[in-house]
Length: 166
View 1 (cartoon, rainbow, N blue to C red):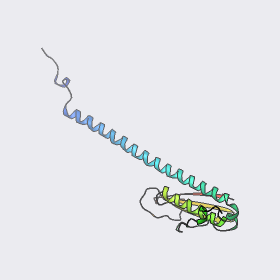
View 2 (view 1 turned 30 degrees about the vertical axis):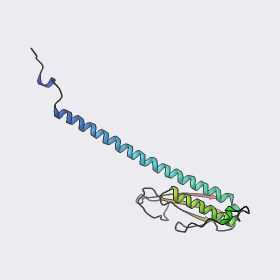
View 3 (view 1 turned 180 degrees about the vertical axis):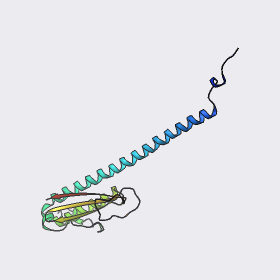
């Protein structure tokens, strides 16, 4: 004689559905966590690129220190056009310090625009102290750069500055 009770015969449909619901909520949570992690990793990558580009430009200015001290060749606002690359780069005669500053700006700004979404840079000078500023659209919403740095919480632009003395 079989004396198994009705409850010991297996899972009911409701128990299976509740188990699937709990499993589904867990999978959605892991997916959201992974998505957020990728977003934060990408923001950190952009910040690392910006830091690298700021230090690269600082070294270019220091390498051309006589021009940087004696003129405003490196000064530019965020909305200024990228200067054309001088033709002396491709010649064996070399460039003057002024044209080298123009080339440095061209290369720096072109690279920043390629590697950071809507990336743009500005350089200001007070005596022999330079301030380099990079802006980019960290959330890729298509915003234009502003002059506010550091950025506030209500903007989607990201900004970094580097100040150094010659």
